[in-house]
Length: 486
View: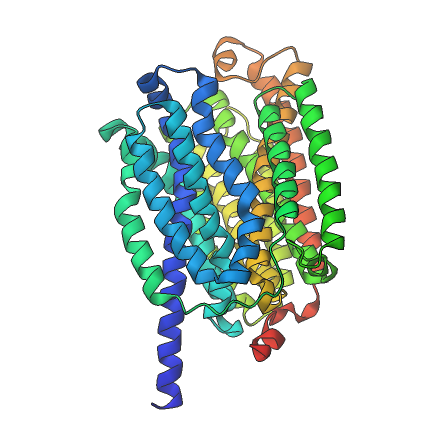
């Protein structure tokens, strides 16, 4: 076979792997977004409290976030394909258990199992892609997973609501079965064979400690977003998270085979890239939390219409991400990332000036601008981070990036909730859609709260852009030298 034919075959193989991983990424992200739309139906079915049914959503996210680093390390040791295929099959099986659950307690258990399956996939997804494609196509390939996340964010709430309304909440889990079966078979067939690379043993103590730190932090942020920012429980959980985080750092520095090698953070590309990702998702999810309150409370749009108005943001991200990924394979991705975050910051400042009389067309244009900026940032940054990680630690590197994403999302919602509630309280009003309908001064107070919140979101976006500049200039071709070492 000629070299050109071999190259074409390798490209087709790499593309097939990327599409398979994107399918799994879409399924995991879709489930996280869609289930929230069905919580009221679940509550009526099981005749349980809101606090109980909320754990159907919360348990999934907590388990997913807390186990990513451990599964990333195990994937480096035992093989990424093996872990990914097990995750896909486990996600499918736990989806069936979720649909068959006769009580809310059993549904929560099934969702915990589903979170473990999703974690196995998301911990290994980026590493599998980086292994499957040459460095010259890495940005474009990672852009496909960004598209998958964006499409899930677009389709999750809308499609989840439609499925739950037409066929009941169980249909949200049943739809995973054919997708999971196809995805498991494709992953088993298309992803290259495993060659375990990471030496040493697994660090169980480090895994338990970091899981405890992340769970404590995420639960505290969930309480803040629920309006309990001044609760003693929040401060106790934050203190516990900080203490466990410090303990984890000490454990990793002394461990012969650390769960998260400290040497990764000594690399400027990795440390700056993960910091940029945290600020990026913080900025994004401030806006995600704020948007429905503005659209439904101030603009008096329905929930369905509000979803459609926010749709251009995700759609534009899905268009821009693969384009910026392809450009980052040829150009210095730092400037793409910085330019994207400048667009996001400008869009968020404009959004902060909106009032009840702002035309919908201007809102749509602003959402599109923000989505384009986010797409310009996300793929070059992810490509640089993954390109900086040695081949034997790519599972851990991808898991660290995914963990940063989840923490940024949770922190963004908590910050938005705290800012909006505090600003509204300073005017003697509550942050609720019911209060919006019954108070003449609500719009004025909410306009003030929106300006403050959007200013913080814009500052976070600029921080993400500046952090991306700290990546070394060599990230125009981030994996070139490591590619030669394979």
